[in-house]
Amino acid sequence: GDSVTQMEGPVTLSEEAFLTINCTYTATGYPSLFWYVQYPGEGLQLLLKATKADDKGSNKGFEATYRKETTSFHLEKGSVQVSDSAVYFCALRVWGGSNYKLTFGKGTLLTVNP
Amino acid sequence: ETGVTQTPRHLVMGMTNKKSLKCEQHLGHNAMYWYKQSAKKPLELMFVYNFKEQTENNSVPSRFSPECPNSSHLFLHLHTLQPEDSALYLCASSQPIWTYGYTFGSGTRLTVV
Image (cartoon, rainbow over all chains, first blue to last red):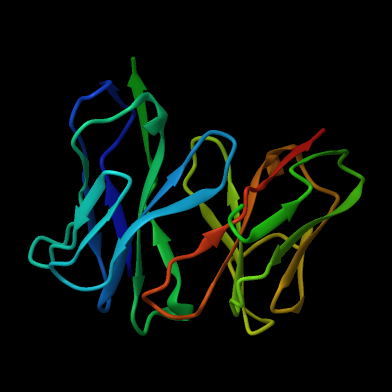
C-alpha cells in the first residue's frame, strides 16, 4: 500500500539554524506530495506541495523537492525562527488510489529555541 | 480562517451524553473527511464522503455516527463515548483530485469524562 516515513522527532534547534526533516514514501501509483504544518491547538495547514518529479514546492522560506529516483520529499529551511515551532507532516496522494486519499506520516515535532 | 469551520472548538461530555460536532466549508469542495488525532498517535482517518456519499468507514465504532446532508456540511454524532475517545477531531475538505491537498478546520477538542 501507500506509506510515508518521516524522521523521528523531536527535533530541537536554535534560532537561525538550518532545518532538514526527512521524508520518504512508497506509492502504488504516481503520487502528489505535500507538507503540512500544525501549530499548537490548531488544525493542519498546507505548507507546500509538488505534483510531479523534480518539482520544488516552496512557501514561507520552506522548500522541498520531489525526488522520484530516491522516493523522497525532504523539507528544508535555511534559517528557522521560534515561530516555526510546530509539528510537520509529510503526506502523499496517489493518482488512481482509493478515493484519492491523503496518506500521512506520523509527524515530526520541531522546537526552535531563542 | 481556513475556509473550513468546526464547532464547537472545545467539548466536554459525560459517557452517557449525546452531542454532535459540526463542520462547514464554503470552498466548493466535493469531498469531506473526519480525522481523529490522539496524543502520541498517528492521524486516524475515520470517514470519507465524496459527493455526499460515504465512501469509507475505517472500522469506526458505532458510537460515532457521521452525517453529510450536502457537500458543504458534515456532522459527527457522538453517543455513549468512552474516555479513550478523548482527542482532537479534525474535519477536512478537498476536491477528489490527486493533485489537491486537504483544507483542515481548527478541530474540536473533545474530553469524555
